[in-house]
Length: 144
Image (cartoon, rainbow, N blue to C red):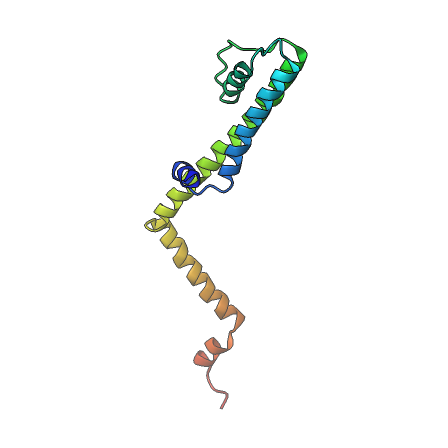
């Protein structure tokens, strides 16, 4: 059911499930890591999860921020990873929308029709150039 839901939301984007899974996994891992190595900044696991979700979604209310070097290091890793992952996710979804629109337009686009005709004419010309005998035989005057 999850697969169908993600496909309904994102369309047939290759790897989107793995990307969403990776974002969630990194968020959870950083929340746990932040709690373990910076307990003064993140006194509860719930607070570190809240901070992680805020950071990944780039909301960052500022109610939970790390002050220690260890906490800021985890935050920096999470921010860079989240920014890169969400950028790739956005690009993948945008590419899927563009592919859908191109597929829809491809059936009725006059430019595509014109290019198809040009392609067939070029193929005929290439065939005539590569095998010139039939063309000469029909026009050639006999040597007799």
